[in-house]
Length: 280
Ligand SMILES: Cc1ncc(C[n+]2csc(CCOP(=O)(O)OP(=O)(O)O)c2C)c(N)n1
Ligand code: SF4
Image 1 (spheres, rainbow, N blue to C red):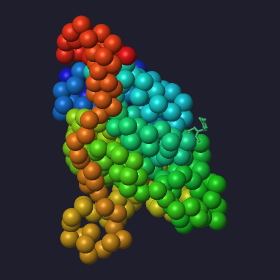
Image 2 (tube, helix red, strand yellow; image 1 turned 135 degrees about the vertical axis):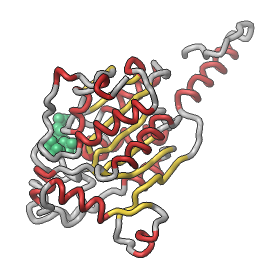
Image 3 (cartoon, rainbow, N blue to C red; image 1 turned 180 degrees about the horizontal axis):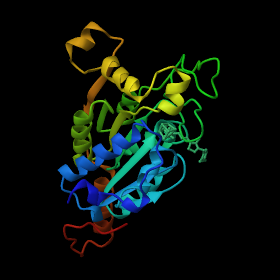
C-alpha cells in the first residue's frame, strides 16, 4: 500500500492556499500510516471545522467531518464502541483549544486512546484570520488590529497537566521528526497529542509581516530547538521541540471494559466470560 492509496484523489486539488502548512502535515501523516502498515479499513479520521479539519475529506479512511470544536467528542464515542480502530483527530488551534478546549482537557484526563494532531498556525484560517488562544501577545489578527493582549496557552504544558500520556511538538519544517512523532503517537496506547506548527501565510503571515511560506518555515527552523539541545540551553527564547510526555497508563477503554467485566461477574457469578469483556 503506498500513500497514494490512502487518498481520495477525486476530491483533489485540495482547498489549501499555496504555501499552507496543512498539506505537509497530511503528507507526513500518511507516511506514518504507511510506516505502520495500517489498513485504511482500520482507521477513522474525525475532524471538526477549519482549514485543518478539511483533511478528513482527502483521506480514504472512514471519516467524519463534524462540528467545530467537537471532533474529540465524536471520536470518543467511536473509540468506545469500536476500540479496535485507530482514531485520528486532526484539529486547528481554534478547533482544539478555543471552542474545543473543554473536550481536549477531558479526553486527555480520561486517557482516551485517540491521536490528536493540533495544526497550530496561531490563527483562525478558515474564517478570515481571527486570533486564537495560541496567537499570543503582540500578534496581529483581524480581531486584534492593535495587537492581541491575550497570552497563549502552551499546548504541551496543558496536555501534560490534563493527563495526556504522549505529547510532542514539532513543525512543518521538521518533517522527518514529525513522521517519527506521528508514528509513535499512533502506536501509543492512550491519549496522544502531536502539536505541529503549520504556517498560514495568507492570514497569520500577512498580518504579522512574517514573509512568505518559505520565510515562515525558516522561522520554524531558527526559532525552535530540540529539548535537551545546547542551542536551547544557550537561548531560552527558542521554542522547545520534542517529546514532552511519554508514559504508560491504563487507557479509558480498557478501564471501562474491566469495570463491565466486574459488574457482570458480580451480577452473574455463574457465567464465565472469555477474553472479551461483556458490554455494559
Ligand atoms: C459552532 C461554530 N462556531 C464558529 C464556527 C466558525 N468557524 C469555522 S472554522 C473556525 C476557526 C478555524 O480555525 P482553526 O480551528 O484554528 O483552524 P484553521 O482554519 O486555522 O486550520 C471558526 C471560528 C463554526 N463553524 N461553528
Ligand atoms: S487560510 Fe491559512 S490555514 Fe487556511 S488554507 Fe489558507 S494558508 Fe492554510
